[in-house]
Amino acid sequence: MTVKMAEMDVVTDGRSLKTILGSCVGVILRDPEKRVSGLAHIMLPEKRRDDEATGKYADSAVPALLARITSSGARHGSLQAMLIGGAQMFPMGNSTLASIGDQNVVAARKALKESRIPIVFEEIGGKAGRSVVFDNITGQVSVKTLQAIVSTGARK
Image 1 (cartoon, rainbow, N blue to C red):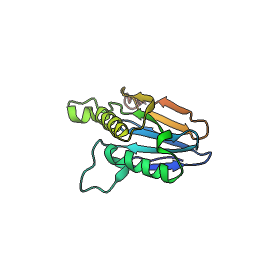
Image 2: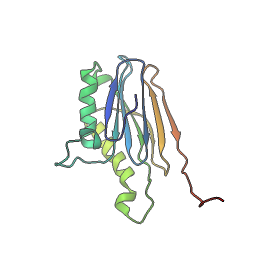
Image 3: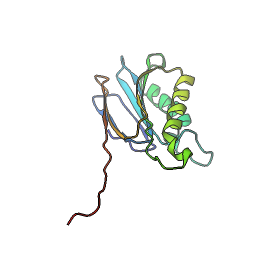
Image 4: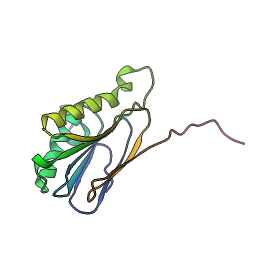
């Protein structure tokens, strides 16, 4: 099941959760005993009052994913978190834009800490995007670093 930007989903069967991340952060919550897992594809650290997109922001996506995964049979006390992404995709002069990946990681960690969910795996930062596949049955997360596409001009 592919989770798109600013969305989240939960699986309770043999399906995998997949996404592609740049400066966004993927938060995977998993109950290894119940084999219930969820993935939130977080774009920004803090929710804006005028935006109803819960999955878009770390401070609203983590509690919302926690609610969805526990209503699907996971037990809060058994949950483990995995944190992936948060790359610096925009190395331009704008320091706020350049650090959005870092801000997303900090906000996701804070939300997980507030929810008392331990982080058991992290692959964060860097300057390249990542593709992520999480196997709900085995609990294995596969992360591949995406190479930048560089244009050298038109060929004749």
